[in-house]
Amino acid sequence: MERKRRFFNSNMGRICFLFLMLFVLFNMSTARAGSYPEKPIQLIVPFGAGGSTDLAARVLASVIPKYLGQPVVVVNKKGGGGQIGMNYVIKAKPDGYTMMEATIGPITIYPALHRKAPFTYNSLKAVARTEVVPAVLVTRPDKRWSNLKEFADFVRNNPGALKYSIAGMGSLSELGVKSSMAVTGIPMENVIGVPFGGTAEALAALLGKHTDYLYANLTPCIDHIRAGTLVALGISTSSRLKSLPDVPTFTEQGYSEANVMGWKGVVGSPKLPDEIVKIWDDAIQKMVKDKAWKKFQKKLGSVPAYLGPVDFTAFIEKEFNKFRKLAIEYNLLID
Image (tube, rainbow, N blue to C red):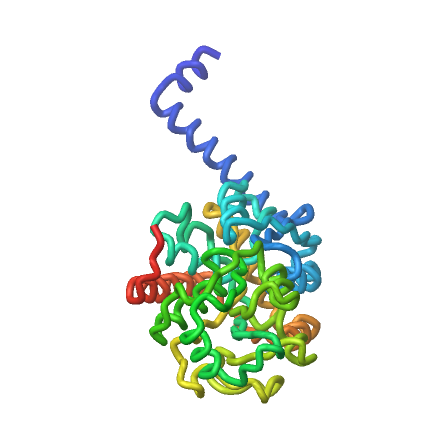
């Protein structure tokens, strides 16, 4: 007994004990990752229900459980241009049970436009990109503009006459309007921005005649365009979509600078273990080949565009740098 006590009190004894504890902890963490997931997973949407990010999240949540083995529950945490949802996931326990439906606004545009943003493009761990989403500039039929030139001329010659919906500060809808105004030389003071908690609210305001136009992802607008309750003056694709052949591109009308392509994906806590990232990535790779998921994408106007963790991380950084350069070039940075 005395010999054992002397051994554990010696340097060699302490080293052996330390290695034993590290071995136990390693095996515990491996077991945890190996058994993940053991319960339902929260998928945070940093905007309100009914918008493009919410719809993408609900489609994912309806298909991916068959590949993860557990239900995925969509939870909306809107506010602050995605800040509330972002901060919630940043502070969440890195156990893989709180993930986020990533989108262009809070991940790249907001921190690119705001010098003092409380987070930046790499504050969350990139897991996988799932799709890209064209953007459209939409208005109501009663406005009677048939193309972007007519619209731009009206804005230039009637300062203060129009209001535009903003689906959250620092969102695609804000950047799309600001960048297009900047490149056409029209002062931002000529239009009045009205912020909302997400695309669904911004779109409802346009349809209800509280605002006059909206720059947004195609997903929540496509059914209204097809029904004729909204008119798309331009779309951010390189060529016209087969599903919307009458909608001209920004490029063909001479406004290529207005092209901003939205995207969706999955991100998690900044300290999310690589083992859990791989489990999600493997499931997403299977999901993007799933016929049901692809059918939903076509209906929503999205284009499947998978990127794995490494490529998605590089893509996010490239997007942030592009928007920061744009913000500096056109004096869009906000302190």
